[in-house]
Length: 565
Image (spheres, helix red, strand yellow):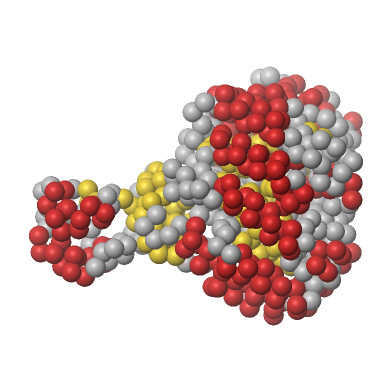
């Protein structure tokens, strides 16, 4: 059997699959096929690879038995590593395939497609016209049954769902091999790892805009299964992992899940999980997390502190606990059944800072909270924008740190409460949103970034990704990597160390170190913290230097660390 998987990328409330990330869907689907057809020839393409060479993709796909389009950016953002598949691409490319059985799967087939925040999602049926099967349930289970039924589409239930993780155990292990075909493999590839599905707040209905409660009751994945998958991925060359595919990591295997809105966390289970991952991938390079419910941290502070300490014990620095605060307006919180009131969110931020603000070996604090705000929700008024700003200003003025502030407009999705409201509220407040966002970037983001990574901070293992004019864009591998703009063209796809020399809204300017003193221009030298005109003048006069000792006499011990000969 010949199969093509087209990875159109994913961005959901609980999961990310835009490069350098690879999400669970293509891995599970590949594993489902190999579980039935051990010798299946599976070709994996990212959507960006197809854009670069559509002719090759169409030739291979048209000579295959089965072609699977996967995708679903339900909380779309701005990306450096790739661009999620567009509705027109799904329609056009699928229309150009006439021989294989064609399946559309993933969140795009189940919930629809988000094009941009503030606009309604496109329903699945408007994207699936050219497909033989619209996988409206769990795509890996549907593909498993399709292959089992020798590709007889009429014998497969397109709404089929998995009730547990029994089959996923096998799919995840067998499908791990597909990572070898990812263009970022061997470079900066990071695998998203699933711990459970659903939202613990399902018992009270969850947030008005979120798809996670639509998955139903929470089903936890066994620790052993997760560690076996990590071991398989590690065997195939993955060294970076994010325990990101869940609504709230701190609620993993939590006691009273399904009974309480904020079930009591289980620190012992989380320690067993992280210890097991470290044993499965002993020389991993990045181990990060993602979603954490600030309500869990607020209602269970002692257990949350223990979990934070456990994560820091096993993870790598620069980690982020993404808090879905969504709004600091109490009225909006109530009407949308959000997780925390503003004072509760503030306390949760303080708790994570108390344990996680210490700086790690790579230059970043060990574990900081990130904040997600969503605009256009039920009950939002002009005052909401003021309250959100004041909340962030309070954090800044309190000396606390947050790693990122994500401000987005709600994307109403079929099945959620916001679908009935649509984009009416966000359209009404468009004029406020733009001004407010700019104000936060200018007055909150920049001073906060200066606190998190002051000038002179050395960031280790920064990966050079892209040239933009005469600049190089680079990032560390991580859960929410900080963009580093290097004011010179340097070789791509290399790990380097940089010193932070300036700050922008959501990025820093960094210089690669050590700099060759005899080759570095005065324009670059003047960017280095602590460098002044007199030192630069002396350097120019005495170049070329033969030893670092000569240079030390001019720049001193502190600046010497930035240079080589």
